[in-house]
Length: 302
Ligand code: GUN
Image (cartoon, rainbow, N blue to C red; front, side, top):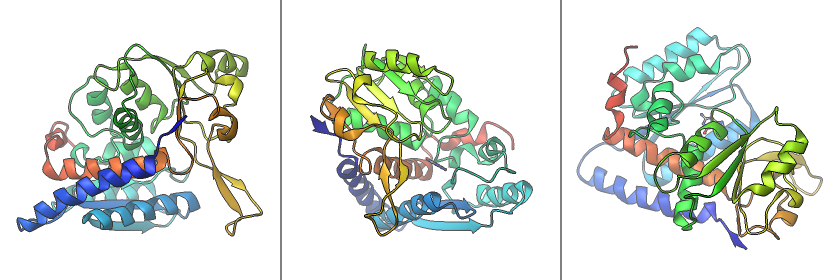
């Protein structure tokens, strides 16, 4: 069994980016600048955003963390996004999800200028990605593909089962795995909240590559995994633990102890897909800075 070491691969990517940034600044140019907007005080979101900011510092980007109260109106949040849209010294903007219930995430996502949409959530970027055009791609799905690529895992003609159809992970991952390219060219099945449990138990063992992004600890057990399958666990669940100082520990959507005995390759939680998301976000920010795909920002009127 091979452990897909997202921590190591993400470190390699960050070191590559750091080198590119030092060339930029040695030329006398400003470094890339990422703005993260964090609404409210969701503990997991705070941890993720802090990690993103820390990684910006490591590679040499400028970063701004804009914290806003959970009571902020949708209108005020849209205005804030627009300020950063118009700021020529800002290359990338992310609004950490989830947002409070009174805010419609699609409205916020649509407001971010596509050329600065380093999360790749804007409908224009999703459309471009779907049609295989250059674009800013969502970070977690591209992190999954990057892991498959760097571990030389073939995907062409393989059966890939994606469990979960979220806008952030499941849906875009299913598109990337089925579209042309390498990684890609897989036969893809998507299971979701309305897939009956007995169907999930029937379909998952057919997967050569099983990608799970649901948010339910230990949803996938060994009986649901084919011998030799590649298993990508996107779940980061906080489960109570009396042994840790924080009172919780992190668990994936896959029962690691048993499934790792059957899988040919598997991502650990933590240290698998999570760090890859941050690395790919940083890569997107450099792409947005270089504007090598960001002219998309000019296509639709705001
Ligand atoms: N919440 C969970 N994953 C993500 C992500 O990749 N980007 C943002 N903005 N929010 C998230």
